[in-house]
Structures are given as C-alpha cells and as structure tokens.
Length: 222
Image (cartoon, rainbow, N blue to C red; front, side, top):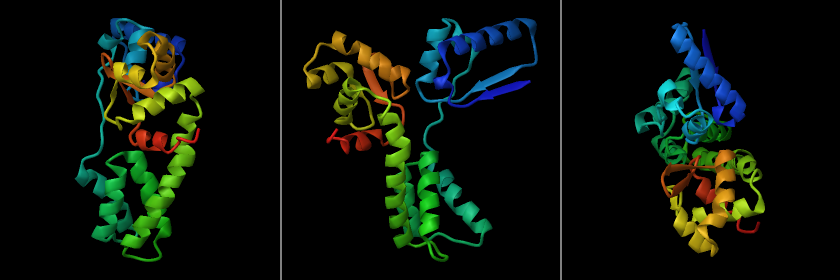
C-alpha cells in the first residue's frame, strides 16, 4: 500500500503524529507500506515537532528549481505535440520569469499559449503572457498566502522583503521593526505554522515560495 499526501505541511499536528506512529509500527512489523509526503520547506520542521524521532522515519529530499534544460522541455515538448514551436526570444522571456519554479512555468506557459495567435509563439505573446501570468499569480497564488497573515505578521513579511528571497536574519528583522526579538517570536512562529516562512538555519527565516519578496514589496499600501 502507498499513501501519497500533497501539501502535507497543512496537516493538523495530530494527523502528523498519527502518520509517524503508523510508519513506526509498520517498520516494526515489516509491513509493505510506503508513505510519501510532499510539501513546502517547512514540512520537515513540522514533522520533527510532531514526533521527535520523525527524522528517522522519513528520508527528506529537497526539490529545488528545475534545471534550465528541463524547464525548457516543459514548455517546448507539449507544444511540439500540437505542432507548435516556441521562438527563442519567447522561451528566454518565460524561462527567466519562471526561474525554474514548476508552478510559475505552468502559469506563464499557459498565459503565453493563450496569448499566441499562431505558431511560432513569439516575443510579443511571451511578454503578454508573463504580464497576464503575474496578475494571475498576484491575485491567486500570492494573494491567498498574504491574506492568511495578520497585520503584525504582514509587517514581519515586509521587513523580510528588503532582503529578497534569499532569507533574513531574525536579528535584522527586529532592528527594522524596532522591536525586541522576543516580542516577535509569536508572529514568527505563527508565520511558520501557516507555511508562509520557514527557518533554513538557526537565526534565519525565508519565504517558502519564490518571488514572494517582490509581491510583498508591491503591498506597501496595506
């Protein structure tokens, strides 16, 4: 039996505890069971918080951005099946904006396809597709995450945005907000719990999805 769960970082802690217990018992009994969880970078921490021995139950593999050749193939190969080709200019525009992130490739690729009147897909279609795709991401993908944050948490996210998507020192964030690090602990913990940020190393926080910093910077009116 194989149990496959996507967006596993959103599972309640009691369900993560139950999954860890099931895996532990299945290993002891040598049951033919595989449990695979997919989720944001915050998932390993949530597992560890659910069960202290979770790191011994699961093997973690980080799936980063697609390699350039794989990202290009994701756009080119399905189009070829429909006898449509991409111009190199159009490919360069979409690949640069997507930065290898699969969901962004889907969004920009679809909107570019919809904007193209004929084969080959040209630079104009790609520019229009990227513009439409960014609007779609802002009103859906990013907005859903942003709206989950409280006013205090949004201030925290804005302080992080100054460093881009590479991550921020928690001490730097407290300086920017002119608050003691301890007072920001609840907001930080809540943002991690909501899957909006994670801690790649001690004293550092980062957004769980790429290009979030640019979106947050566009929310200065809030």
